[in-house]
Image 1 (cartoon, one colour):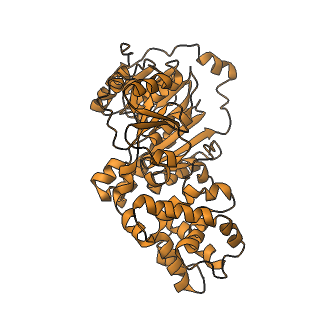
Image 2: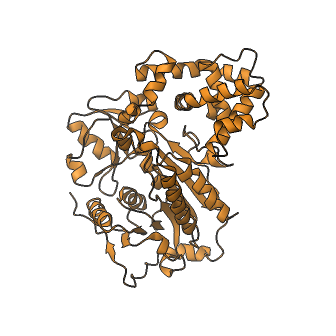
Image 3: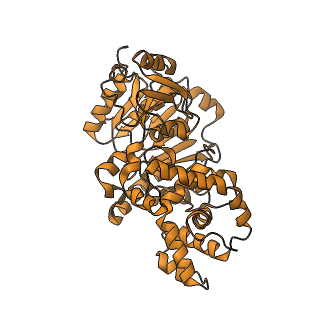
Length: 462
C-alpha cells in the first residue's frame, strides 16, 4: 500500500512542477527507491491510456474518496503492471469491484485503435490519430431557428437522425449521413468527423454555427438570464459571443472586447449573420477597461477566453504533432498575461459569475492561473461545482480543482479544453436587490469617448 501512496505523491508533485520525477522519488524517503521509480515511470508512460480508461469506466465518479493520482497508479498495476500480488491494502477490494469494467474499457480502447498489445497503445497515443476522430459538432442558432426545424431540414436532405445520444459510444459509432442530438446541450447536433457543412445553406444563413462541443460549454455554464449585462472580454472570433446572445434571447447587453481590428471586423460580420442585436463591439484591450466605468456597473457575468497556446486544438495536433508542447518561455509569458486579465476581470464590482476557459491542455495556463487569481482575491470568489457527471476534471494542483473541467479527444471526443467557473461568495454591498432588478429595465448609456465601437445589427431573416 505504501508504494502506491508514494507513487501518487510523486506524480502529483511532477504535475504541479514541484520537481523532477527522479528528484521527487529520491526525496520521498521510500525505502525501495528502485521499485518506486519503476512504478512511477511506467504509470507516467501510460498516462494518456490510463486517463482514458479511468474516465470511460467512471471510476472516480463511483469512488469519491479515490484521488486521481492514486487511481492512476492502482489501475496501472491492476491492468498493465504485475497486479497487486499481496499489495493494495484497503484499495485492493475497491479496485477489484471495478476490475471487469476497467478491463472492458481497456479492451475497447485497443479495438478503437486497432491494436492488440498494451505497448501498441503507446505508439498510437504518440500520433494525432485520436484528434482526427473528433466529430463535427453543429450548434443550432436559436436566434434564427429551433433544433426541431434544423433536424427536419437535415432529414429532408437524406440524413438519418438517430435521436439523442446516450453516451460517447453512440457518438463514436456515427458514420455516413447519420447524426445525433448531443446528450448534454439541447441545441447541439453531432455528425461524423469528416462531415463538411461549410457550404450548407443553413450555415450560410446563420442558422447553424460550426462550433466544437467544448467551446460551447463556457457560455452554457455562464448561463446569463435574459436581460443581463455581460462582458465577453477577449471575444473574437465570436462563436461564444453569438452563443451568449442566443442564451440572452437578444435581451440585455453584451460588451465584447478585442484589440485586433481585422478579427473584430470578421466578428461583426459573423454576429450580423447570426442575428445578434444585443452586442456592442469595442476595439479595445480588456485590461484597459475600467471596472469603475458606470457603463459596466450592472455587469454580473463575464466570459473570459484569453489568448493561449492552443495546445488542445485538434487541427493543430494533426498539422503539427509537437504543437501540444509550447516552449517554457512562451508558457510563462502566456500565463502571466492570463493571470493579469483574470485578476482584472474579478475586480468588476457587480460581478457574480465568471467563466475562465482556454483551448490549452497546459496546467500553467489553466489550474495555475486560476489558483493565482483566487489567491489575489482571498475569500471573494470560489470555484463553483459544475457538471458532476463530466468525466474529465481539473488536475489536482490545489483543493477545489475537481470542480474544473477538462476535455480531450480521448476522454470527451472534443478538442482539448479547460473551463473554470468562479462565483462570488457574497453579493457586493454596492449592488442592492432593487438596483439589480432595475438594471434589466434601464437601458445602457450611450458610448462615450473616442473608442471605436460597432453595433452588431441583426441580419435579415432567411
